Length: 119
Image (cartoon, rainbow, N blue to C red; front, side):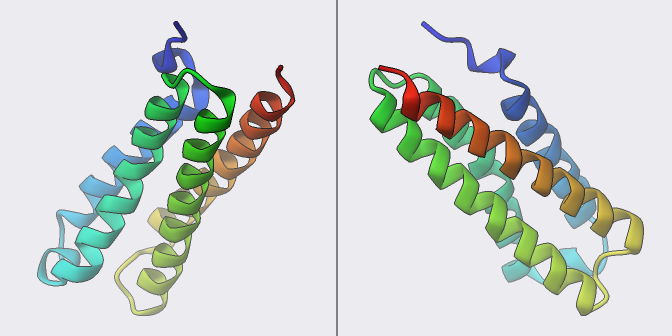
């Protein structure tokens, strides 16, 4: 059985979700429940789908969940751009989220390629 806790991409996903929660606890996010909750759900979905996919019995099923994690990462990336443009995210938080999303996307692409080529 694989141990998803050892995957760096899973660790980065968990750290990013914690950071998103910290950022969205403050004004103005705590008054915009829709965007706040959407960002939180997307961020939690990243590591959740990585762990679920890693524990499945087939690479095909695993890859499907890793792709969902990629979609959630792209969703969070877009939400952070919107949040920045409307003045909710400061430059430092915006850059942190976006840099982490880009790294996670690249790592997931590698994981998908690896699991797709395994027989």
